[in-house]
Length: 193
Image (spheres, rainbow, N blue to C red):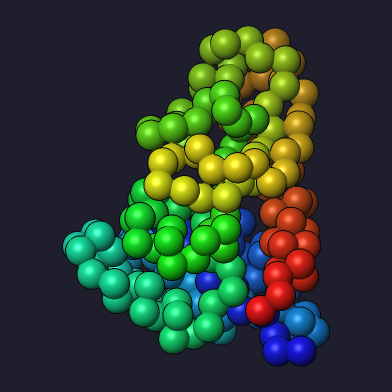
């Protein structure tokens, strides 16, 4: 069976991208083929280089007004696109080119605290402000709208009245690093390509 090929999109530090890449290092059936970013200053670039994974940088115009990124993914025979702290809305053409083959992780329990502008510390601040008793992660398929695709997996962590947004972020990141690579592996193992 041919190896399943994975592309990761990230805009920031890339801790989730790194965890996924490390998880699949020397994996018999799955490889991280590419890491793509819209941010030339993103920490993920140094992480990718350290892991010897090719990086593709692109700008907003290329992403939204051309099919260049779709062509790259198709030419590399990418089986699954994984968003790991990627801040741009996926263009409709890409969603259609990879139906149920693009997934994202969100640092809250969707449908709560999702949508445009709800990322990173904004999510954790909203959770603390609302005095939620738990938060967590949602891994979901990507459609044309922020955080509205079908949910694949959720995991929770407690939120105490004393927790700061930073403490909630720490708890959520533990869940991200624990579960995201495993969910990616399950999805790729289930794909019949």
